[in-house]
Length: 164
Image (cartoon, rainbow, N blue to C red; front, side, top):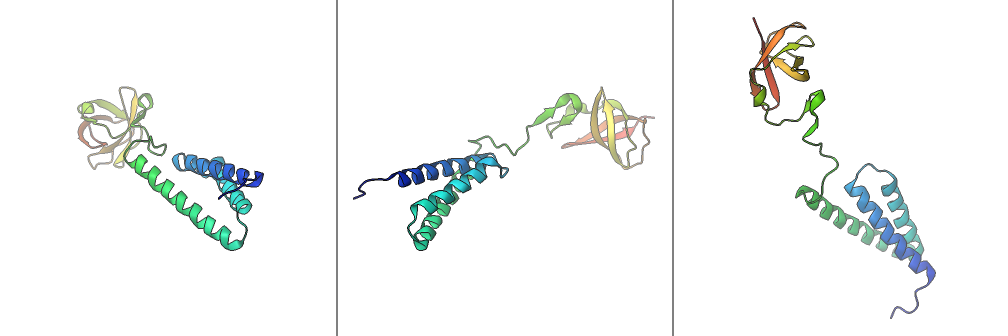
């Protein structure tokens, strides 16, 4: 049925496989970089090598696009169910020492005393035990170096008031 497979057909098959693998890598690690561009080039060259006419090339292109769509659906499904680790989503905590903390439960900070590093208009930055946090005053303008206390936590928002 298929007869002999010549070198051009084998090369086209290798290019198809490489193209799909490279585009799959680009889907998991996005950024339109080397894998994505290389995958597109591999697929285009493979389509050019394997097709005998423009109509056949168009049909193969439609099939390739459908396969890429199916790959995208599968990869998005795996990413949404957390079966694959998404490189786009930030880690929960990046650097506690510098104060970059995600919206974890910050209630442990209630009652902590610190000092305003910037004017609070009503938001700004304050230092608590050597760690900088973004804070919001209770609605009042507070000057830099004002002594503060955290009296309310709303999600990731730290509400402060001046200590008299």
